Length: 346
Image 1 (tube, rainbow, N blue to C red):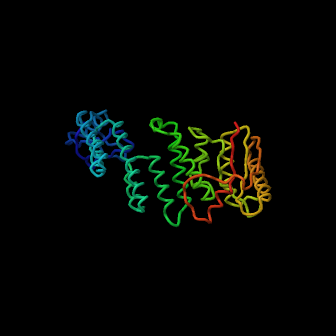
Image 2: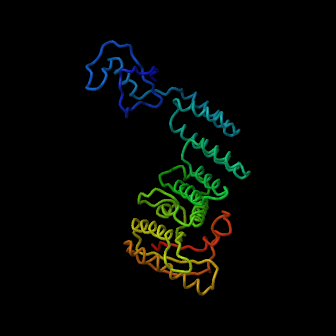
Image 3: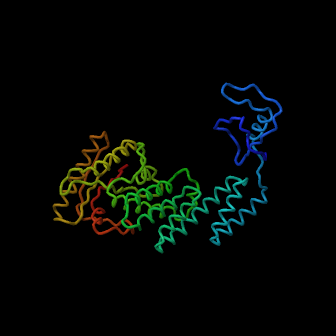
């Protein structure tokens, strides 16, 4: 490792510059100057040599034995919930321990913070729980899920925020490129529970969860596209209609547009849309209305260019939702009932 001091002001380095991790650049005593480039200060020869040496692969600052000692100490500190000390150990390890070990310990540190935040949230200490999560060292489905849980406990509840966190957590938990997920015990069960939370929060929000408008599926629909360890035979969507009518309202059109984008990308040959209604009103009227609403959505999707064969059905109030353990106010309970289920038939 090259231990060096700060560059003199007469040397201009334009990013990006491939310095190795934790490299610091040496300022040499001027011994002679190269011709200056137009608009640039003339660097010294020794400055250039120092820069070149700093860009070469460097030896680790810490010996393997030192890293092993730090790693062992870190593990003990986390086990003892000494998170400040553990964070200090992580900083020391970042000075030269193998990147793989540092990343694994950062993930362990982050997941432990999420578990501690859950305990605080259950005790009503929501601000303390959220502050703890800000110390997370990496993206983690546990952290995003815990942020969703904390948001669900705040009153009044911002269901859009809850849906956003749970949907993002679901994306991370179904990432096919994350090899570490395969080591999680009960992965399929965890994915199923998170899918239920993301679905329920989105139904309570009444529209697709906030996500980048980049034309790509996100959250529930992305998990459906990946099809990893989750039964996606029925995807519940918050497609809303005008009261007692089969016409889409503005939120319903937003949901329908999101669904159309997904189907145009996935290109299934056939799908089924099943409409559901809340139990207010006569059963026979709800049966008819839910079928009409599914047909309205089918026509909207065809207008948007979806070429799949679309079968529609209406269940009325006959299939009440059993989704998650979220506890919304009574006035939102009916939104769980009013939904359209998408089935990818192939």
